[in-house]
Length: 292
Length: 49
Image 1 (cartoon, rainbow over the protein chains, first blue to last red):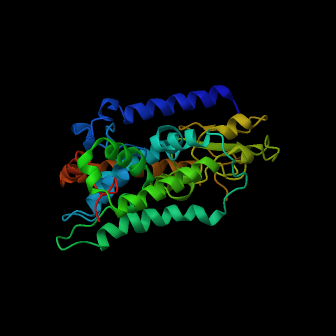
Image 2: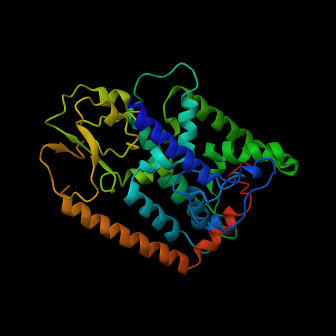
Image 3: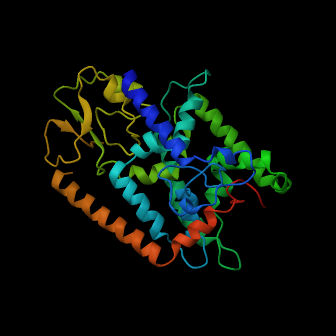
């Protein structure tokens, strides 16, 4: 792995993390930042109930609007995510997502690693999360006033538990009194996610993240894309081996799973994989852009 | 997918995104987002039944 490119990416990830969570002084307060930045959504997954969070979580905000009395679809959030998606695709996951960085740091902890690739069908769970849990349930299952719960946040999201729930419960006695069965269930989910992240790189991104599923739709058309030069590629398989998302970049460089981490580019001694220039619109028959 | 097709799709997505954001702001979604995000979300942190 090219240390320079890996280091640069880590720096960008840390900067994005700090910009998303600048109110570190709030961490011990038992409360959260409530300023006007909260009307904008973060490009990556970052719980808005994290005391340090500056922006709204896009998945939480989407469910809040979908489950509100007045609306069942959030044009504001979907439009924002489409804008991020067309510009960056899943590079948001690789560079800007705070929970993505947390997962990478957890994976660095010495622990037996799962060397095998995950079964392919597991990646489809996140599309179910997006379609059913995030988009449909808050609209379909509502209370007497017509409001739906944010089901993904309430029952699944480990980012909410780790970034928001645990720090707030540790520092706010009133909230601690309210904790019950749902909290216990969410802590189990969070521990399972951490265990998964210890053994499998980007475990949550691969299987559960509805935001990654959304951005994946843009990977083939976003301004940031990869291409593989078929003339240079020796099909040695190195790029596929180093890929943290179990993608084979020599065959499908713009897979919906690719988070643009650049490890494949650094691993290729023939420099066959590279970032495609955003302005380039011509087709080169010797390059693979998005083959299945 | 051809390069020109991709560029057309990109432009359409950018225009659609801008239109959706504007329409969302116009019909008052931002206040819902703000209200939710600027108070502790009990569901998000696992409180409640």
